[in-house]
Amino acid sequence: MNEQVRKICELLKSTREEVRCAAALVLGELCDGDDGVVRTLGETLANGESAHLKGYVLEALEKIGSPSCLPFVLPLLQSGGEHREQAIRVVAGMGSGVVRTLASVRKGATGAERRAINQVLARVRGTQATKLLLDSLKEDEPALVQEMLLDIRQELRNASQEERTTFAEHVIRFVDTADARKDVEAKAAAVRILGYLEDPRFVPLLLRLSGPSRDPVLRRAALAALRNVPRPARGAEAMVKALLRYLGEKDFQGIVRPALDVLYPMPCSPGMLPALEELAKSRQPQVRRYALAKLGEIDSRRSAEVLLRHMDDSEPAVRDLAAESLGKLAAAGGVVLQRLMREVNPERAWVMARILKPCASRLSLEQVVHLGDRVVRLLDSENRLYEPLLFLMRQASEKETRAALMRRGLRKKRSRRFEDAARTFRLLERQGLFDAEVRYELAIALLKLLPRSVGSAARAQDPALELLLGLVPQGFPLFDHLRKEALLRPDELYYVGTHFLEQGNTVRALGAQILHLVMRKTPRSAISREARAKLGGQGMR
Image (cartoon, rainbow, N blue to C red; front, side, top):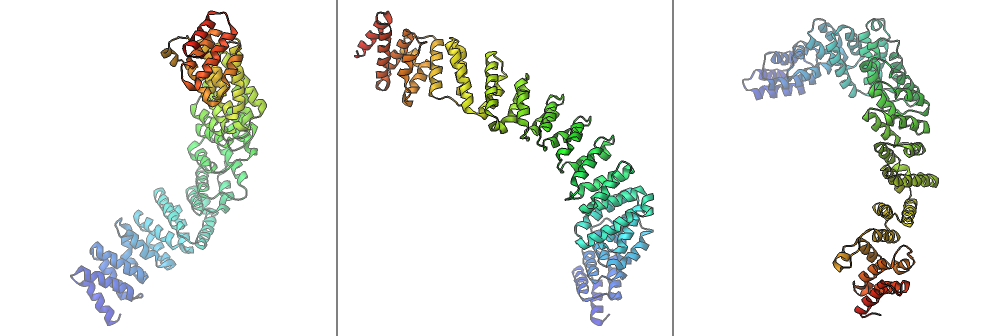
């Protein structure tokens, strides 16, 4: 120690804390391992000085990196104070040269000290450090092992690829040792570490260790490790098939749940359909839900048929999931449509109609026509089941929906069932298919249904007249239609003509035309005389 350094060491005894902190800071920058300096810093650390000063001293010791500071730093590993992490960095910074000392200290250390030593070993990561760390899996109590695993996981995140590879080699060798085979808990802990390495090359080994012939403790550890390992580019299907077999086991928490965690992100191929079909019958709700979700990823008619059967399940969550999965399958269209056509439960019919909505445009013309026939039959029997079918038909083809309802409305009109006809034309209105022709037919049906009043105020509230008036600005050939309308009696034509005649210039002439039509149809009748008088009163002949 030269004179300058000695004087700086003397400053560590100053009564002013800021001077002592500055001295520690300078010593950390100047000294490269002088035992005298390290001893002086260590004694300062051990004298119970302020926390602020301890931080500067530890920072200096970390920069110096001399093993001679260990006797002063190791006591801090036991404490749970603010300097524990800093003390770990000081010791770990010495590298593999400190491992032998730590191994010696570890034998009589407390639990807190052992955990700190484990943290140091995980950070050092050399061959000797890793060996000592893995050996502690057999020696430490379970709680300490769990803490060590967390520390290892954290340290591996910061390790280089080369360090991770070396660490993995040590773990693999440890798993195969006779000691590990005798101590299943230690072996299981090492297997969990393999998962932290996140290397898909370990998948075959982890699958073997998770097999039914293995100890349950080891199996659970292997499945936990598989959760963290990226899925392999090759062999993924074999991995899924192996894990699917675990879903039928009785140990839900230890085997089934972790297997599900591994399986969920992995795709299922069509070859797994039989297994999923069986799993969909499982007594475990989580297994059933997994199977139904995965069936929604296999686009086939068989998947759709299996899912459709679960639409009748007593559990609402199962029904909902089956419906959700069905909605993802392009192949479900024909299967679900067939079921919808037979469905008698309105709630399920609506679910199936919504499932089919995304693929409605792909329904064939024959299917749409068949759907329309079913809608009409349900309407005829006044069965509300027509609503979901009509919803679907509207999505499939507006043209065919309009045609089917129009045919029904006209049929009801011809058979003088005007109320039913009006209801059908109103359906077209609600479906957004309310063109001029539908407006006209609805007006005629309402005209036949509703009572008529000669008073102008009452006529102004008549929906039939309002609909007919609305057709005029559209250029609809209203007069030609009224002239050919076989169902309208002269008094009904008179009612329309009178109302139009009184509306003003835009439709006045049309009203006169209609009244002249009344006079031609029944020239000697009382209604004809009334029409002539009405025209005369308006100055028209």
